[in-house]
Image 1 (cartoon, helix red, strand yellow):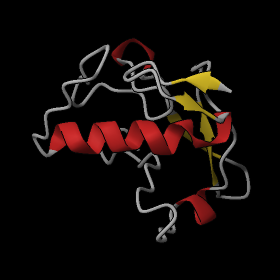
Image 2: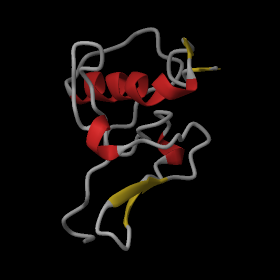
Image 3: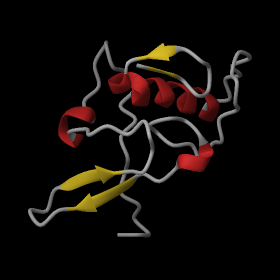
Length: 104
């Protein structure tokens, strides 16, 4: 378990990316969260921890043609991209990395 770097809420390690995604989405929509310890840096926020200094998430293509997620973020945990892309009532924010068309 750990605390959100942005709001301080206690989180399980496997839910930090969903929680951070919520902060990022709110910031992108112009929603102001007054209780944040650190402001979300739109376009530079790490999807796992929310901090701008950690935005080091990459998609790497494997020899089988599938993609895996790689990151140096201390909050990183392995995701299955196919299942992470699916949203539900319990997880409405998918917050999965996307392949940059300029880099591929």
